[in-house]
Image 1: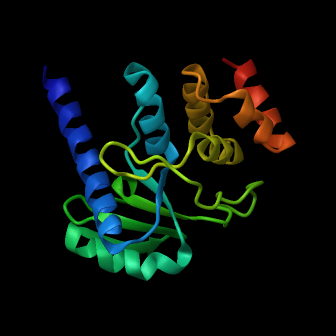
Image 2 (image 1 turned 30 degrees about the vertical axis):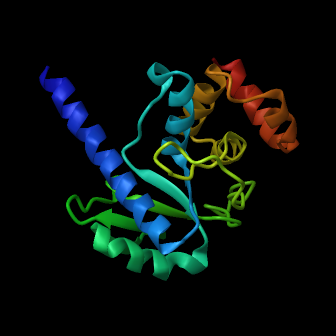
Length: 188
């Protein structure tokens, strides 16, 4: 029972952080998309809540030119902007650790120079029931196959395992990313 209580507190803090962030940006009229592990979690959990995995941080795609406005908008919601080790993030004043931060990822830019593809521009979304804007599955698949770290491959397996990666999404991928998808599927 103790582990369940600790996990419940962790999940509650994570979603509180996400909600405060999305509320701040919505009120300020700043466009964003939830991406990364949290984006995958939100899509996978709609299909099968037991197949969804949480991550410690929240990654969001934003426009680079909005960083100052984002920092101002989120400050009253308990965040402090920090640029450290080449990363732009909003740390929670109540728990100011980089691993728990909201990481800002910029649309139309490569996260790392060696990545094959930039982060996709904002695509139309259907908001969650809470009004949060989550990147579409096609964008998440492209980003996960671009970064292709072990955790990204796991996220691709999670999306594929619940049927989110459709033939249409697969055919829209550049050839090199389709090859990576095939590689992930071959190791399941």
